[in-house]
Each structure stands twice: as C-alpha cells, then as structure tokens.
Image (cartoon, rainbow, N blue to C red; front, side):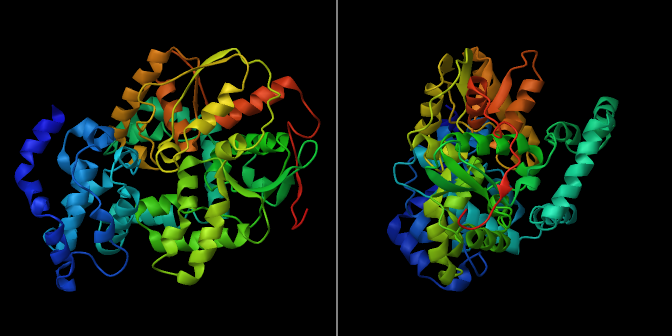
Length: 481
C-alpha cells in the first residue's frame, strides 16, 4: 500500500521519465552546458538508462520501507540524478538530502532485474556533491577533520585512540553519559555517544610489519589488510583473523606500509582522496606475490574489489594495477570457504543467527561462504534470520550522521533477532558488530555479538592451544619469507 500511495503521489513528477529511451538520448546529446553537474565523474546515461522503473527495488530499500517516499527509493534517486544531468534540477539542498539519506547498502542491486549498478551511480553523485555543493560550515569542518585530517594518518589515529581509551576506562565516559549533559546539545549527541566503539589494547598497529606463521605445513602465503579504525577498536578481531588463517596453513603477512582503504571516503564522495589511499595500498600489496589479499571487513572489501572504478576515468595507467589488486582481494570468509579449510573445531553448543552485512551479501554477492563455515562447527544450531538481507543501520558513519533513521532500522533488526531465540548474533563486518552490540546493550537479554571469524577462532582455541598461536607476537615481515 505504501508503494501505491507513493506511486500515485509522484505520478506526475515521474511521468517525465516515461519519455522513453529516445528522449534520454536526445537529452544526452544536447548542449553540455545544460547539465547540472560540474566537470569530472558523474552519473551517466550508460548506467542510469538500465533502470526500467519497474519498482522491484522499492521493498528492498531500507529508506523507502521506513519513509514510503518515492524520492528516497533507488528509482526516485536515479530519477533525480537524471534531472540534474538534464539541467532541470540543481545540486540543491533537496537533492543532497535525498542522496545523503541513502545507506548505499546496495540491496536494490540484488533486487534489480536489469542489472542497474546503483552503487556506482550514487557514489559518483556524491562525488559531485562533495565538489560542487557548499555544505554548512560546521558540517564541512567536521567532514574535513574526520576524512582528511584523521583517517589517513596512522599516528593521529593512535593518539585519538589513546585518548578515547583513557576516557572510556577512567569512568569519565560513564559519568558523562549518566549525567545527561549531552542532551543539552543539539541533535542526538547523547545517542551517538553511546555508539562509540571500545578501544582495545594493544592496538593492532603494533602488528604491522609482522608475519603470523602457518600452523603446520604452509599451504598459502596471504597478506592481511587490517584497516584503519579497526586497528584501534577491533584489534582482537584482527588478531583472531591472523590465528584462524594460520590454522588453515597460511603464512599471514601484515604489510607495514598499508593504510586506510578509502571506503568511507568513497561513500562520502571524496573520490580524489580515496584514489590516493587506494594507490598506496595497491603499491604495497602488489609488491609481493601473495596468493590472496585478505579483508575481514565487508564494507572495506567491497570498495577494495571496486578499486578499478576509481581509475577507469581518472588514471588509466593505474587502472590495470587496480584490476590486479582487486583480482586477489578476498573476504576472509570467502577465502576460507573456497579452500579445504581446517574443520578441527571443538563442540560449540550454541543457538546462533547470522546477519548478512550489506556489502558482503549485496555488493560482493557472498552469502553462502559464512554459512558454510558455521555449518562445520559441531553443536552450533544456526537459525536463519528473517530479513537478514535488510540493513541494520550501521552503513559506515550513517548511524552517526542519520542516527534517527538508523535507530529505526536497528529496532526492526533487533525484533527479528528476538524472534530467533538465538544466544549468539553473528555477522561479518565491524560496522555491523558495532550497531548490533548497541542494540543488544539496550535490552535485558545480553546476547553476544561476534564476527564469524571470532567464533571460528574460539572453536579452534577450545580444541587445542598450540604454543605461539593464542597470543602470537609475530615475526618481522620481509619479502619472500
């Protein structure tokens, strides 16, 4: 019914689209000055013309499901992108609001029968916004501080991590949240503050430049891309990833010169900076002949696999290198499920459910691999989660920037989780871990929330404790080790 109401309400506006392909071609071949986009990457006819306006994407879109507004659906956003290119709609506050409100979860790509590459469209549209739309001064300042002055810089991240760890462990954070003082500030600062991830000691930055040796005969030599913020607040997950890979015959190299992958920058439209970050990682990881490059973060992994999109128009010389990099990139669950993985697990008598990360299920099309790994753990009862493919509301920094809508999505997700009766919630992306843990923290039922790899690590560790694996120090990495 929401769809019918919205379709009728917007019939007049959407009728402009029904001019057909010939009209689109005519507009496309008109004067370049008519376009509302500036120079550079922008949504183009070749990609948006695949949309046949069938509406099958609507029910899969979290913002449309919550708001019932056509312009906050994939079809509606593509319509707006077309109107900007035609010069009928400016890069105004209205357009920016609708594009910003998209989670970029890419569930619409799974539902689309025409193969519309919606992620590509919305990300270049955001690139246009980043270049040519003037945001309010405070928003511009915060974006610059976070994306430009913090994420790309290891030492700055470490200092921020130390400060946050002190703030969290000293009791000051608890006192501030309990005082209610944050409610005096505009927006939803109190709710956002409760989402702050825990800083884990030691930071995983200490592991950069080391190798986790294979347990038993070496079968593979892989490189691990550890991320940026994950080195501070998911250090234990990163260490578990090294141990699990080692248990499967991998020498795990953790290159010293790696850095932020640029995924958050791509989602924010900051494509030039994302390109520079991508170049650094491509040079670092292609410098040696690894069997695979491993990521344990679905959101990062989807952008890493799509590095070539950053260079196909801007830097043809780097395009081939980006393709070679992406060809070796594997999500850790994808890699393990694709080999004869070690099934020497302890019995884990748990009832669990699995939440598909959007950028693993929709962007990378990896759904069976995590389930195949979990099915091999004896005693584990895996209960399928209804609407597991619907976004939990994390979506990079979405739960901070659009906290109200993210909270609604999280509430719906927690209701579905309650229906499973699971003791354990599993996923395969750090952002989802953060969001789901926030949801659990607000309930009386204190379920555990783990990455699939963390559960595998526990199942291996409970079976045996080989020396040097449970708390590895690593060996200094070097080419050819």
